[in-house]
Image (cartoon, rainbow, N blue to C red; front, side, top):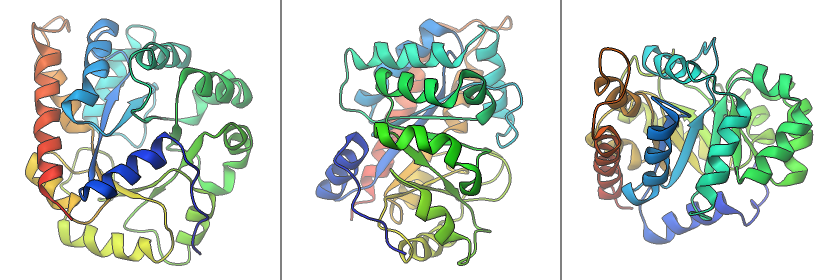
Length: 281
């Protein structure tokens, strides 16, 4: 089943621009307030100039079951600052004062959204300037209670597909999805395996038979070369664990950031962006 034409919004405009420029994009993941609120905001603000086409902001959660050790550790660092959903939205609001164009997608788990209230969350998210939401533990069959509040406000609810998502399952996923499809390149948790270029190529071809939405691929992409290989097939490559690993490697023993941490993260993102753009269509 093919999807209807997606609305003219930040995500749609960004993917249209990437198609016009004949290269894939980079989706950069960072966890809100990791390692500290100030350093996070420095990284966040610098990501577009470093080459991030879409920014995925993690909403920290105490039990991130789909995340590997690196992203789990980033959530724990964030939660030491008592980061709440409202804190994440406040950071997005501040980002939007300087950047009205870069799409922002929040990624997290349903528990914090449920406790805030789906309707309250949706209104606050759109007011802050959020473009889409990925809720890892909310499958399409159970998504209506959130989507009924997101969709009328123009917020995309983005779903994951996996190597194990069969042709019978895919129509159910893409029927509810909007914004883009996030294909998980490897089975298991984030940051523990490497993506296989050939398997990704086959998966993207299969997904394109079911949807006209952009397809981004994440999990297992850790280097500029890997990003370039995946970008040859997908509309964008997502890098998360490798970015938060740069943060983890540049902390003092007491967890405080070392000088120049943000600059090192942004330099790595720039190298990933260069890799993605080298895979021209």
